[in-house]
Image (cartoon, rainbow, N blue to C red; front, side, top):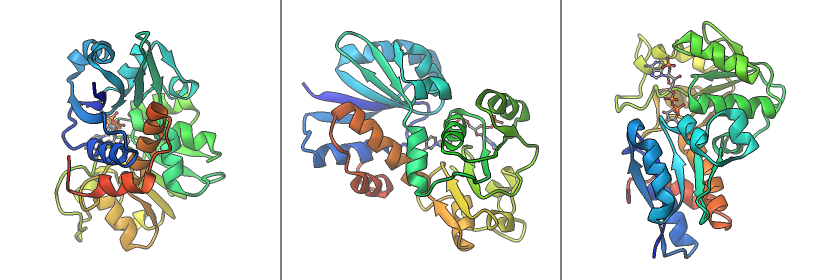
Length: 276
Ligand code: NDP
């Protein structure tokens, strides 16, 4: 029987995880493993997750909007997942246990490629990925860590729980991490004289983006996002969400298979338009 893996989300059609993981499984010679999309609405999440182990699934990644629900369902959760309050990786064991981990946090730091110690970091957003980013950056020594969100009350709650500072407008900082879903739409990424709708939604101008020495955009789309384009055009260190996707995915794959994941190949597969 095939060993099954998948990504639970709603929506999940845009996910590059199947292409990335199936390329890695083939490279590792794990031909009886297969990774698939699992589109599951919130009202079906619990029953679906409880049935996956019995249906031959060894593990699953979890994306929007299920990361907090995934943690709540787990029978065993890592300290990292518990402290963040969200899980992106589930493992189903033969004794019906559901183990929860969060690889978003270490994946973000790996993709950044330098230590954020001592940097003022600004996180945009207050959802599941923002929680992982704030936790990771604080743990790696970034200080202070500011959080801006469209709905300020959510930023305040996140900041209170994870030891950051909620801000009313995005301040200048050394590291900017976009953890909102702004930027996913397929519009042009080129800014105009009036700015760009995606940057406007983040309360940023093109020029302001150029003042952050490091910019990470977790949102990803073919051809890159407007934020990434603005950062690259101004020569700052810009990290594509696909780099973060590959880094967190590699860590999940290593947990499930016990094998070293082919990170470069996973990054290439995530960015290619071939197999879904
Ligand atoms: P959530 O649904 O938990 O959070 C979404 C966030 O986006 C909220 O803070 C929300 O603000 C904000 N937001 C949504 N629409 C707008 C808007 N029009 N203007 C301003 N803010 C907006 O999602 P996640 O945290 O799980 O994921 C966020 C993004 O990060 C997604 O694009 C996801 O695909 C990406 N991601 C990428 C990863 C990677 O590996 N590259 C890993 C994890 C996530 P509000 O509270 O006001 O609603």
